[in-house]
Image 1 (cartoon, rainbow, N blue to C red):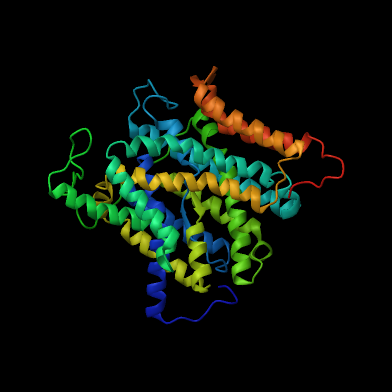
Image 2 (image 1 turned 90 degrees about the vertical axis):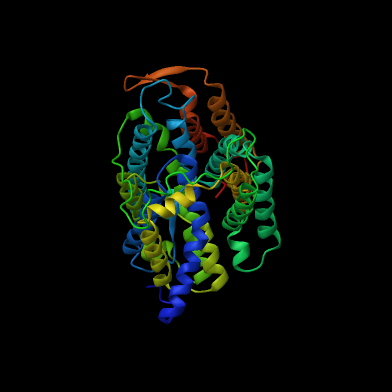
Length: 435
């Protein structure tokens, strides 16, 4: 446990644990809703993943591991019916998701590799290969690539999407305390209540369908086993998925630095970045094996730690237990699945935009000088490669016996180009390397 962790009574620990669970809840359940993965399995995997992380971090770091949004683009590139990796095949959606979780499982080993590198060469030398001028454009690309999905989902009911977005904006801009920390959750809950009223008055979506559908509620039990799914492996799906770990590894490092600043302890040194990366990687491997999404340290929960000044790791561990318990309720998943697409789309307007905005903020906060030729070249090449290849798909080649449009690997190519250019391009005379 953190050396500065406060001693808390059972009642206060229970309440603060609930607060941490709700802080991660809105974003965590969005990942399965947007990707097709199971909400039950997701909650169980993030709960178990958080406990695994705390084991490797020696119970010192008050971090929660939620489901990663960075991998959403990868999942969509594999599963989407019309342009996904397996488009035109006879594979079912579940089979495509199994290949996606196989890619997630393998990407977890990248964390283990990086943990070993950090252990051998040290944090500072490691970060020279992944400076903000490379990681920030990667995050920006992820947010932009997700944007079309927000538009498509919102189009089913523009009014409901606008209401959701309005609540999120109000809560995040004018909210105080916990309200400001969970605007996405408040937007979804508030819009859902309005949707229930609209549905009760017989209002419908743009295509005439019911606004809310409780399909499966009659058969769902309150307590039951989740639909665990074993992963499948294909080299093309793995190549599509692995690059997204670069973004989450950079996010992980940022969260460790932020938590160190908040708590007054240096978690990068003790328990050490190599151990925290190891915990995050093992959590993603276990999640992929179960049929869940990749794990990542959650900025929302870092915000809760900053707000409450409670550094007791048992609070976060209890939040993980709460998530696991909820994961064993099929009825809970039915309720979550009944959330209209338009509400998810409205929330995603803010969420996906914030992902891209975080990438821009990383450039600003790290004082990346885009007037320097080296930095401008890296960013320009990465953006055009990532977006241009993604939407143009000019070339098709064969991997593992499957025809793969070049654009499916657009973000992977962008990351590789960024890393290589950062290593080989010369610094301008008198300029310091971006850190």
